[in-house]
Image 1 (tube, one colour):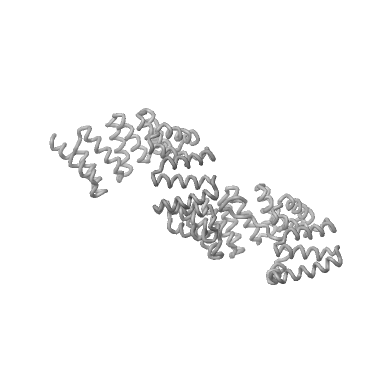
Image 2 (tube, rainbow, N blue to C red):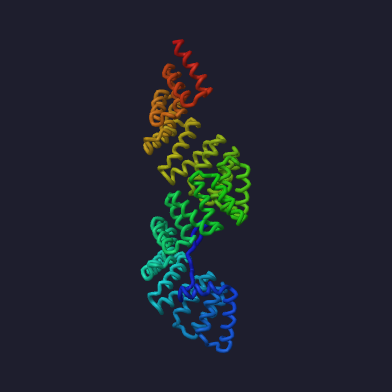
Length: 474
């Protein structure tokens, strides 16, 4: 299964018996090797000894020698094509060798020969999931759970499949059951954390990542995922520590370098952030998230041309990335390239007719170009989409002020202040307009409130003195 943070469907060996596997673990590698040698002697004496071939295949699987395991199971199948256990054994070996199509054929045969085997359905489901047949995988996992409700692996794999299908709530349920059945499985904790994160339940996700790392301290994917979650929660220093922990284990983790760069940027350490992001891109030059993060870091350094170059690379990779189109548009506005900025906002609105940010930004860009009718139209749409948003009225007030409709502008700035009494910019703009309209007393009241909200504001103090003088001179 693809993805930097994704879980992995398990391809566990067929269950000839849990006790057998415990015994294999107890023997250790040296003991297993000795058993293989004794079995090899038997097979040399009798090449048709199916039992010894089968057992040696199991041992080779335990030793990680999956090609030899597949060969031994193949010899058993040649002797008896209806041996379901040998089919299962070879299917598992093929899965370990990532030869999924061959594995799938063996799973099909095993299920045909011995219907009702939960392990066979679980293995086939995992194989289908790796091949992209998620619906088929789900059917097999459903059967595996029905046949053996206590099988943690089946619940785990079904949970992963739910997550990959975007059914994150169901993923949480299945992975929770897997955790109940196998509390010491860090992969299940990690996978459930990912599902919680996709549901936006960041605190729950953190708890699961914490548990996964308590079970396996050097579990890199869980530490990286916890770092990303901490970024989402704006816990930048803690996130940085997680990414540094991943990099101590794997200095070439592009994802951890990207996360480190984002954390450092948010901590104001922009030069260090740039180094981490450059290193990440050296490892993965076409990663859109890293390019977007570097673009944002360039903005923080006021290097807008470089930011635009990175954003443009992202858009070339994914023309539908509205977030990056918006970032490029606002960077162009910083350089006074308003027409080009408007083109980006037009594309966003074409794809998402209810995008508030694009209407707001396009409205300001049109105002700065003197396209007052278009600016007012954008701001009207903003008010229609978000009538309780003070920014919508502030933007329209600014557009009215620029076109000389001062009374309408005063009314809109007033609406913005009514929705957000701490909106200093709207109060300041309204105060300026009051003075232009010959109402300095009202301007003084706005300046008084600005000074209360922001004591010592030099601009407000000076402008208030001027407004008082205007009022006294009337």
